[in-house]
Image (cartoon, rainbow, N blue to C red; front, side):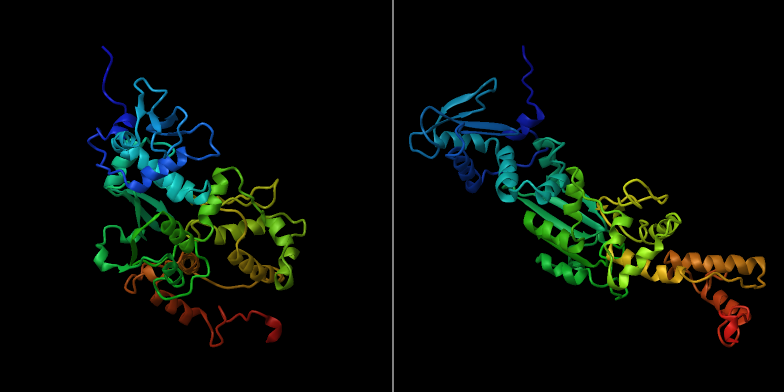
Amino acid sequence: MADSTPTASEAAATGDDPDVPDIDLPSDAFDAVLDELGDPDDPDDELRFEGFTVAVSGDGRAGDADARYVLDPAGDDPRTGLSERDLHAALAERAAAVTDWYVFERVVGEFGPRRAFLRWIEDADGATVAARYAALAAGVERAWGQLRITARVTDRGERRYEVRHEADAGVPREELTVHDDPLDARDIVKLDERGRYRPLKTAPTLRGGWIFPDVGPKAVYETVETIYPATIANWHREREGELDVSHWRETMERQSGIYGVIRTWDRGEGYEHVNWVAEACCDDSQCLKRREWEYDDETDLDVDGGDGVFPCREPCSVVVSAARKWTRLESEQSRTYAFELTPSEKEQLEAIVDAVADGRIDEIREADTKEGANRYRARFLRAKLFDEDGNLGGVPTDPDDE
């Protein structure tokens, strides 16, 4: 005797899986099925999707009063000669599969970055309808930079999304500022927690305290793209093997005007300076993108590109602006300065540079004088080693000016 236990897909289609939420078949989803079957440009008059297949039998056209339908014509137990009413009843038993088709084929539609992103959120290209709807009923969470995105399914198979800062996970909605317009995100991304302007939107300095609690497929895409511009588009290009990377040398050769000076940095003396730039600007602690650009097509940098989920395809404006400044600074001739420091003072100067570079100054408590970058220790070092003109060790920067 054959095993009659339904598969995961069959269970999702018929609603027999206890973990799959009860889904009603909305009229617009059923009308969309008839519309698809009645497409004059599709001579097969058949709709195939995970969990169900519907075809028009005989010479009738979908939507005609005398039209007859076949459910799962290639299956072991096809249901034939169905009227429109019979078809509706049969598809209502497979409402999860039908609404899944409707969401991605009609509500989302286009085969592009938005569709790929929304399917990625719920693993639609890897999990069955049954597994996804069961997970969506509880809420599927995904991380995108500093965002926490939660996807859910309604009793009509519609997708609804919540977007909040990862630091606000678990915070009750009523304690956060509620938004429903994706354009509100433009104000959220302007300033960090301390009210400072954020020139780099992918810096890990996104402030929290807000929530988009209930947005649809289009709005969640627009919200994420407003917070992290072009990240979904570039992520999708990379997945499709179409990411067009512009490496350092190519990008700098395009610079002109005040930024044209950067091109003078390449004088056949290697690319160590680019390693310094990448280490300074492109670390995960400074940018959430994963750097894919190198020195040129044939020369990789020695610095790791990071672990971000979305790729960086070219040196950004922040990198270019910083590189312009460093180009000018590096053009200076080296000089030898003589200072006398105790071993602890040398280590303290190193600790101060590290703390500033890593953005840890605010984390160092005033009472923690064991920390080299402690404010009181730094002030003591300044009092001891700097003269009244601010020269370290009393040594002027340009001795010729004395």
